[in-house]
Image (cartoon, rainbow over all chains, first blue to last red; front, side, top):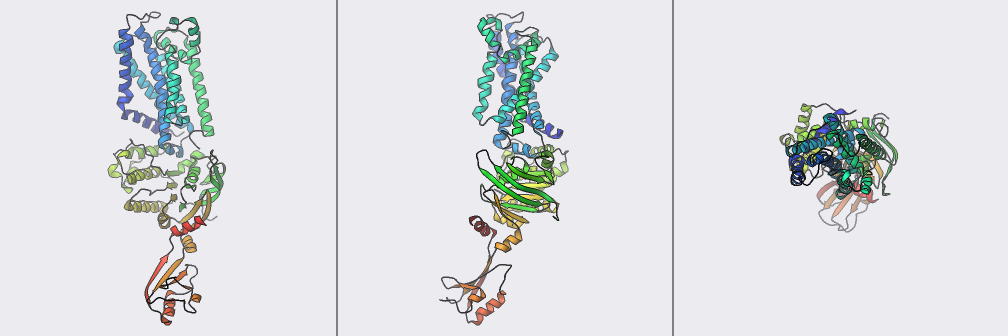
Length: 253
Length: 308
């Protein structure tokens, strides 16, 4: 195991994020503030509490999950795609670094960035809304595993993407709609029964509700389903990664 | 085999998914500690060949052995021994010179060695810009950064894909000197180049590749001997209309304008001593104004070869 290389790639990827602090940290803080100003404050009077949780507090885990999923995929895919595009990947391909080490270091770096982002959002949200986390350790574990899973997914997207515009397709056309329709900002109870049933087919619903459950101990679905969705996504992504690197698609000709 | 082969290729072929056959059945042995230059036109297969040896390109058929190890079976062990300077300048523009060089060393699982990093940066005249971002450097400096990155993990085999493209004359000489020093310390060097002058001045052996096939492999001096005819042009005081009797037997020819006698020879088959030849001409009462000797350059040899 080439741990020096894993550490070097990990630090290098994180250093890149620090070179653009505005984009990496200021942007999510501002976006979060806007969300809570609009949803949390302006609509406060109109929006009902859900199982004892006020609306503004209710959307905190939803918003964190939405950001974590989209940013993990976007960051991981962009980072590896850009190295392919600019050609800098040659160096890692000619270095004694296995595919597993390459993937692990990238996924760890992206997941770390996503966790920093989640923490930023959490702290910003706390300035606007009062809430307490019921299961802090499980929340942390759940977030780390989600960040890793979706960083891996993003890595695969970046390896397979053939152009910058295609890089946007999965986050824009798949993840964002699924997150918005996955109960990030509402409880399933507010939907007509048909839409409730349809929503249960949406994997992101389980992810969002898993986090909400660890936050407040209440959710539309039990966390068992959330872990099931998360674990199967991870296994599928890992299998896809193994297949890609065994046939050399997208990276080695 | 007297010497150990650093690289041994057998029947190496690469057909890209597009159907383009970049390499066809290449057999090649590169000895340890030699400078091997691969000459070829654009698209001849030079880069694909290098990429196949480094493991960036998976060969369609044939085998690649590096230091006795099959690249397919032991890719990681092979890559530890290889340093590679790619053709394109693919630095991460935001990165700083020293940091990117150290990064390369870590990638190859080598512990930090500031003294070595300093020596390499100094050898490549990069020490003064070590804190600068790579994007702020000139093209020639960027190329030297790539070379530093390839050297910093102390490879046994170094690939240089057009190492001096876009590098000024002084820096080119410095790079050549560095390549020779590396060879003398036992590193095997394989370089591709368009610059015949480069191959001629630093390579121990030259391979010519065209359309994915190796046309020939010869030690540089023998290639020059074999194909490098020399010509002696003797400028006459007064033009001649016909070549005097007996001159053709001496290997002399008259140029169409009648002003020059041309004697063509190669180092291997020299018919006359130059002095004897001039005496012969003098004895026939022909005045000589000037004598010029000219050697065919590798460039002419190369052009003749690939047009053959």
